[in-house]
Length: 187
Length: 187
DNA sequence: ATCTCAATCGTACAATATGTTCATTACAGG
DNA sequence: CCTGTAATGAACATATTGTACGATTGAGAT
Image (tube, rainbow over all chains, first blue to last red; front, side, top):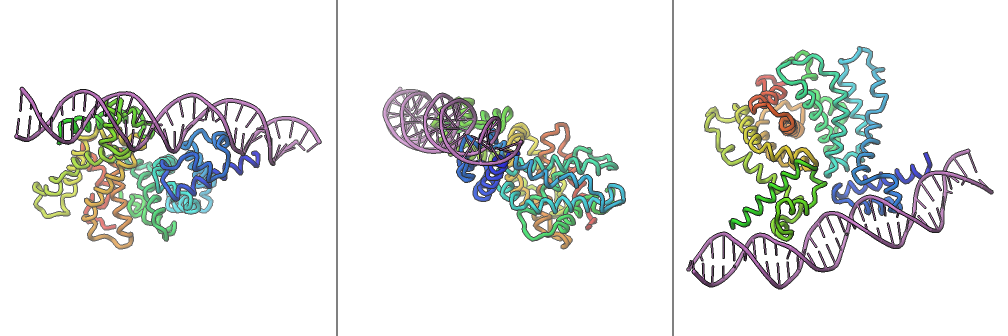
């Protein structure tokens, strides 16, 4: 890709996230982003259809990193097949999220958080879906999946607001409130 | 209060919720609400400062009903002190939420959901805070409270999307994923 | 019935934001 | 060095927001 495009795209992302740290999404105008990024008005619209589009693009960029291919391809340090090392998988995701913490904090702070959370939940649904094989049938599987996904997503959100916990600790918090944490407890 | 004011206020609320069923919050303009409510432009601004203000007012109205005074004053059908009948309390809240289902669905559908959820969580925090007396200290109380609150709020959101479950059923779902469901399980 | 005041109306207005167009300039990659 | 693509910035039409104000209506009190 043309160097110029990369440069512009990056400048917009940085201006945007920088603004998100100061004010909430809905109060940021496209013009402000353009000024902060120091680009021409038409240049912005050549890259992004709208402000929402930009937010979406940013989220995509972040999640492509967090849920990068190596995650699905990386049961390398755990040969016990699947199912077993949920803890490892979760911790791994948390490590990646921690890398992008600076960006995520801003997005989550304002009203752009909703879109981020939705993105996150979509990815998480894929991760957790496989783990819900044998379940007590008293509760709809659909409810259970939503529960797990939201639970984890909200844990992430909480973590982003509370500095100073390691991925392992957070992983522990999460698992201790979920059936996975104490295998055998079928409830 | 002047009958005219009530009428206007009600007309705005109904126009607003009706619009929310069709399109998301951010895409609804004040003018659309005014037209749908069939009132004069200046009348709207005499009642509400801004669109956000309207949403806030609507949420307040709903929650004043859901968490009405009788809830805190109504351990009447449960004399076992407190702590015991969490199930009853929760079910009660769910009944009230069910009454406003028509409104809530629209609000939750679009990007106004975030504000509604925040409101809900604030109220829930008060309810659950009292229930977290004796806790395993391995997990921060703050995390635990957030977990409970989000868990319940997301359960509500799920319920609003999935017609056909009774408050008692939902109450059961929720409690079966939480330590409260199986008292004695300290984890 | 009538009086009074507050609420509504609707038009007008200024300010701001949005998204598009286009001719011009600058630069990346071959 | 050449070509095509990206960036520029100004200009434009449109839409939205919030405010102002005089005129009208109707609610509630006497």
